[in-house]
Amino acid sequence: MQYSYLLLSFAITLLLNGCAQKVTVKTLEPAEINGVANTKNIAVTPFHNDDVNLADKVEASISNQHIDGKRYFNVINRTDLNKIITEQKIQNSGLIDESTAVEVGNMLGAQAIISGSVDQPGMHDDYYYVERTKCKGKGDDRRCWKVKVTCQKRTVDLSTQIRMINVSTASVIYADNIHRQKQWNHCADDTNTLPSKQAALQGLANAIAHDFVYKLTPHYRNISVTLLDEPDVEYSDYQEKLLDNALLYIEQSRYDKAEQLLRKLIESTAAQSYVPFYDIGLIYEARGDFIEAQHYYKAADELTVEPVEEINFTVSRIQALIDKEKIAQAQIAK
Image: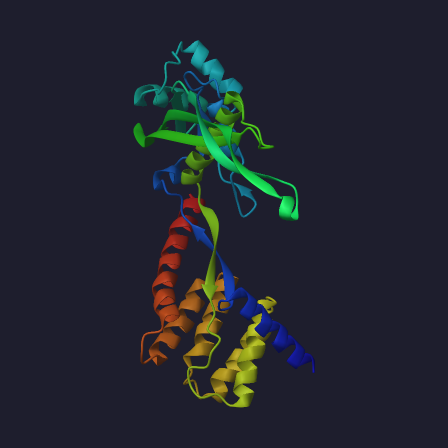
């Protein structure tokens, strides 16, 4: 009775979702800018024309980067940095050059220097009209008419140049012009309001800082992978029950129990069904064991006669995940 109830609930869930059951896999991906891995001690100089405090936001975001509970970067104290800049009479005119970065970095013990310059931000408002329908009364007395409502569109944009220099090699690790723009709309009959220019610019500056630092840091990403839930060979009632219950346990994240049932399914089908091999591979992938997952995915692939979309996709995807994880782990270890 309990099995029938669980199976019915599971079937209803799949029907409502309108798609096959999926498992969330947590993957570790390397920093987009690989050269940063050798420069964990970082100093952020004051940015030129920085009315939005972008340098502070970049520094704070760098300080908050953690991988597996450990701080990824060490940020040089801003007081020490400002003291060096003052003593060396370095002009804050924007992006510092390689020779200056080496000079400042060596004095501070920094492995990399980040500098930048912020362009004059922009904001403009456009006005337009939208047509609304107004109604009054009920039943036969109900009357409707069209009215025009005044609306306002506010566009705010922010651009900056950011450069990151390796102190030991005097080479540019990263340099880019970054631009962000966002629009807001407000009509006279809306309850929402338009943000002030300063509030909008602060949001754009936070987005620029986040996107920039994201490129510097290895990070975890969640992906959804589809399970195989239909027999590929003729199953007995017992074998169908093994698969159905395994899927129920996977849905409840009871991977050990699900694996036991799938192994029984492999044994009872004389290892001729690719479905349990594939689903066990997915269990190992969800656990973060990509090498073992790849072993089972390959075993499933060897049993296919015709192409299976999920298996084709996963066989190529798992190798990419393994390669990315190796790069990310190497970056973290430096």
